[in-house]
Image 1 (tube, rainbow, N blue to C red):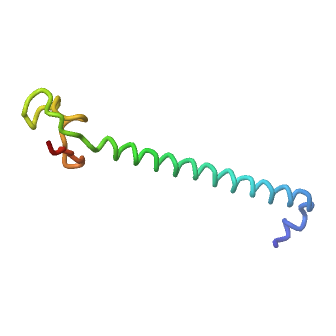
Image 2 (spheres, helix red, strand yellow):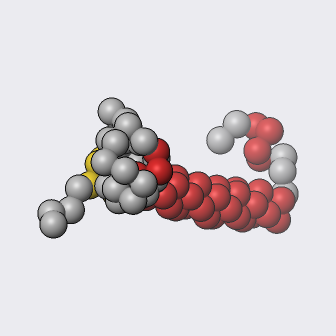
Image 3 (cartoon, rainbow, N blue to C red):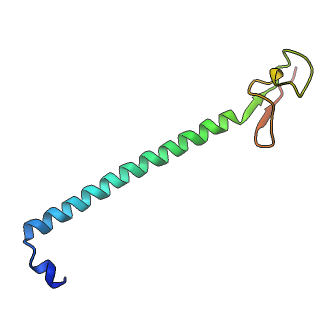
Length: 83
């Protein structure tokens, strides 16, 4: 402990420690919310990265109307059901 801390009344030091604990708890909850948001968004992006073959307007693989979520790309999954 340095000499400056000896001059601070014990009540002030206790308040400072409690304030730091509250900051740590608030930081934890804020970080947890951010992580949950990232997790939620990653699942949403995974859902949007799929498209299903519908074939409702024609047999043209390159027509967006024939896919549920637009044309498949290199970053998406194309689902084609049998039958």
